[in-house]
Every structure is written in C-alpha cells, then in structure tokens.
Image (cartoon, rainbow, N blue to C red; front, side):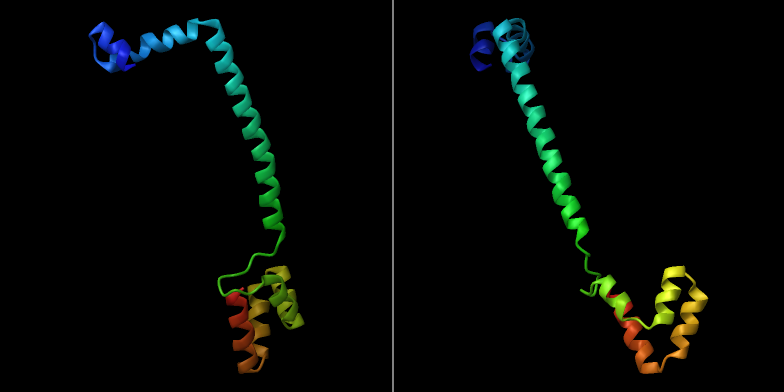
Length: 116
C-alpha cells in the first residue's frame, strides 16, 4: 500500500480500494480468497460442534450452587415433606414443613437449600 501510494503521490488510504479491486479482478487471487473463506467456514463449523459437545458435557454435570453444594444431593437429604413441597412448587406446604421441624433442623435444611 505504501509503495502504491508513493508511486501515485496520494495518501495510503486512497490506495486501499484500487489495490483490493486489482486483487479481486485477478482470478488466481479470487480463487485463493474463496478457498481461504471456505476453509475458515469449515474450521468454524467443526469447532462449533466440538464446543457444543463441551457445553453439553459441562451442563450434564450438576452445577454447584453459590454455597458450593450440589442441589440434587441437598434435595435428596431433605425431609420427605419438604421434597414433596419442592416438587409440587407449593410454598405453603414448604412453610408448613419447615414449621413442623425442630428449629435447629429447620435452620440446617434451609441453609443447605440456600447454599445449593
């Protein structure tokens, strides 16, 4: 670009379009460009499949909650009445289940729920 701009006595930015126009018009350059684009597309497609597999594998693992506990393990240790309340998404039933527990047990299970 610099050499072309020096030869034409114009700023380098004015040389960009003429140079690329010549490259595009040249059949060998155009074929090389198309081949490079196709290779890039193939690499992106292959990587997309690999990345999807990686993401699915990560998603398959049970992610840990903010407190570092596995939600499925915590759920399995909850009293049966709390499990039913969570499964049915019944807030009133969950409140009743928590109220029926001794205070220490209720705090323990609720803290584990928050950590998961």
